[in-house]
Structures are given as structure tokens and as C-alpha cells.
Length: 155
Image: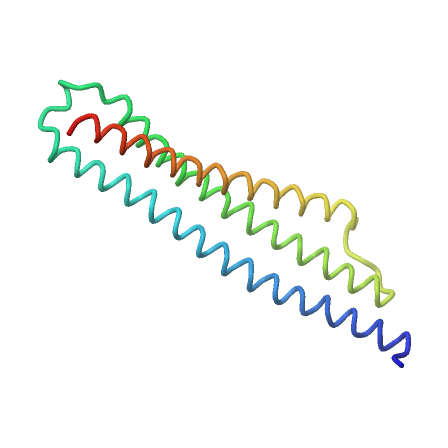
């Protein structure tokens, strides 16, 4: 049977592993999702600009509000994704601080900062990141749908 100290040490080791895994997971997930959104938004924007000139000789003769709306949505998708990078970075930094403090608490050492406040900041930053990523995804999908609608009405 494990002693109380062994259980305690195992718990601390698991928290330390959590920090490493959280860093790796967050970095990988964020990189993949963000690269995908940025690539799709940028490609949609650039391809639609180039493609429109070839299928519609004179844009002045048609209503381009759907086209401009789709372009705006692609730009908003890119900008919200860039902001989500910032909030995601700081959310991960605060998660690491919170976990390090948990380790210090378990070891009976003094913690840095107010743990409850750090957890709240981390949670709020994480929520902001999620909201910005959802906004980015919604803008991308909406922009693609509106662009397809515009093109289908012109062909």
C-alpha cells in the first residue's frame, strides 16, 4: 500500500506532467486550427478577388454587396484569429502559473500571486480564445457561403 507521501509525490508528478502535456497540446491544436483558418480565409479572399475579374468583366454593372460582404467576413476571420493567438498564448501562460502554484501548495511552499485571481484570468482568457476562434470559423464559413451565393447568381 502506498504511503501518504508517495501518493502526494505522485500527485505532484502528475501536475508537472500536466504542464508539459498542456504546453504541447495547446501549441499543436492551436497551430493546426489557426493555420487552417488563416489559410482558408486568405485563400478564399485572394482567389475570389482574382476569380471575379475573370468571370465578371465589368463589376460596375452588378450588385457587389454580397461579394464585398464575403470579403469583409474573410478579413474579420483573419483578424479574430490573430487576436485568438494572443489570448491563447496568455491563457496558456496563466494555466502554467496556476499549475505551478498547485505544485507549490502541495509542497507547502509560498505561491506567487493570488491563486483564485490567476485561475479566473486563465479562465477568462481561455473563454476569449474560444469565442474568437468560433467567430473566426463562423466568419469563414459565412464568407464562403455568401461568395458561393454571389457567384452562382452571376453565372
